[in-house]
Each structure stands twice: as structure tokens, then as C-alpha cells.
Image 1 (cartoon, rainbow, N blue to C red):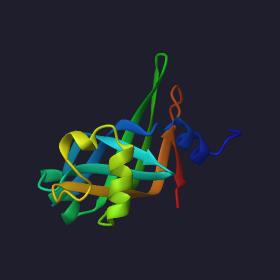
Image 2 (cartoon, rainbow, N blue to C red):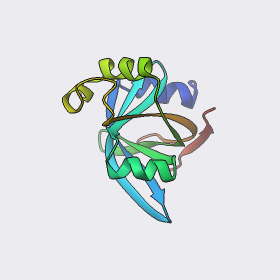
Image 3 (tube, rainbow, N blue to C red):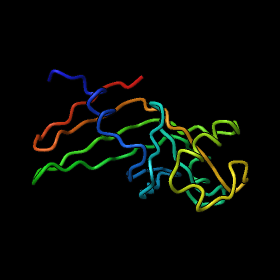
Image 4 (spheres, rainbow, N blue to C red):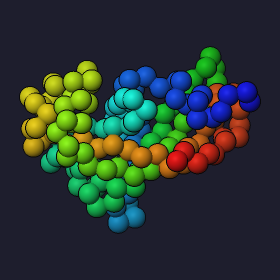
Length: 141
């Protein structure tokens, strides 16, 4: 492959896209769709601070995401494992609030205590190109 996997993955990301996020608490997995916000090569998620997933993240900030890929009749994916860090810096909260198409629908301002913002630090990524049957795993950091 002429391009690095990291470059391929970054080029396919949009500023916002639906991904599946898996958390795990007490050996119980939880998977749900969430909007991945990709901004300046950083990865963010927003949710309600009283939401069940906020409690799950507080108990175990290690997560995995899956971005399904489709090319014609072929499917693939990008899976990333990493850690979610709670963002309390109001300048970053405002930056992502303003960059998002949806956060303002749920919370009136970046300092709203009901608005929880997380930055995901990717540690390892699996890339399965649509049409192939073996994923490539790379260290992200």
C-alpha cells in the first residue's frame, strides 16, 4: 500500500460522522451509535453529563469505536481503541460546541453543566479495507 494506514484513515474522516462506541463496566459491554467529531486531528464525543454512558465512561474511560465502511458491495471498517478524557477547559468546550452541527440543539452554551465533552486519544487502530478479508492493526500514538 503506498499510503500509510494512518493517512488513509484520516482522509476518510468527516468533521462529524456516526460511529459505534463500545464501553464496558463490570464485564458488561455497551454499544451505541454516537457522533464522532473530528477537529484538527483530534477526536471528540459529546453527551449529556447525566446520561448512562457518562457514568460508564467515568467508571472505565477505555473505549473502542467502529466506523463501518462500504464500497459498492464490499464492507470494511475502522476500529479504534483508546481512552476518553473529560474536557473541562471552557475554551476547548466552546471550540467544539461552535464546530458541531448538533451540540447547540441539546445545550444552550459551552459552559452548560449538562454538556459533557470527551476527547478520545486513539492508541491502536484496525483498518479493514472494503473487499479485503484481513484487517491491518497499527499503533496510533
